[in-house]
Figure 1 (cartoon, rainbow, N blue to C red):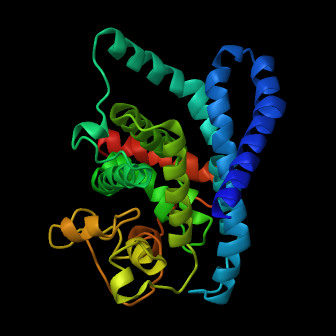
Figure 2: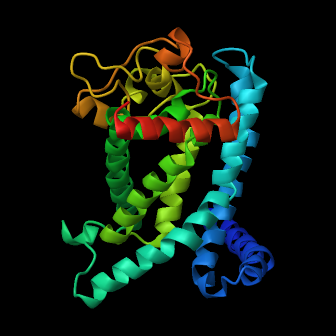
Length: 325
């Protein structure tokens, strides 16, 4: 029964991906003169289908739960609509198309050059031969590796002024919802995606597994950002990042603060809170506080209300951080 359901789901996915590729991406690519990139285009169509699946889960499952157990009433719907624009750009394929057609070819050329020089990618199997022969163990190993990488990238985004200049777009949302996860500066997303793509190529993860890993991660992150008064309990809070655990990271005076030599605040983990526990950045408290950035609230620093304003102000902050003003 389960195998039949999985096979049916796989058939639907493949069929939808083929439709998107043949009816949407191919005509657009050939019209723009990008026919030579269509091998990457098929992979990009998989990301689009995966994004549609994520949005469907968010609308049908996350949204009703938000309405049942909200932390706060939504008073600024315009800000939520802007977050939905970010979600559409990322989950429905626009960002992935940009990445695959304009950036991925450079990675392919770079790793092709490595191959001609006799430099091969590191394989996770090389650490403990046979450990990852079992499919689900293989996937869990990759998930742990990428989650640890995500933790340290997140800490860097808060520690380095030039990166915080971009990442602060994400933290400037005063009313978090399930749409807030993708509220990022586009340049920040390019840097983040490039790092993950390089590591994925270096450790030899299969493309299909990489898509699955990102889908699980992004769905979990959307749930974490929900306007949801929910924790996972005394034990569960240590096993998986909950809406309460992550809201602490976004809280004013907690999420982006330097206290007792802690790098840029607390609760940086993407999926597994264990990284915050190990590296001393965890904060487990039973509260749901207001979100935002201290200077935004106390000093009236402007982070922008509309999409393009947020992007432009991020560039200005980046320039100021780089020149030291």
